[in-house]
Length: 68
Image (cartoon, rainbow, N blue to C red; front, side, top):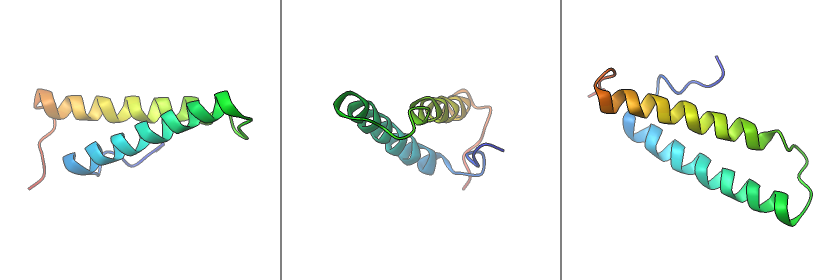
């Protein structure tokens, strides 16, 4: 499995998404300002954020239930 987002709770997913968004914006800024060692990290972060958004959308639709 690429990431273990499926085992995380709803609140954890929200915080992880915000963390990845901040990391993605920092990486984009670094790519403009100076050289980045791994330019493919930008694509990987964008895909992780998309996976998280998909799981969060499943919660919104009621496909997944929040753990109590």
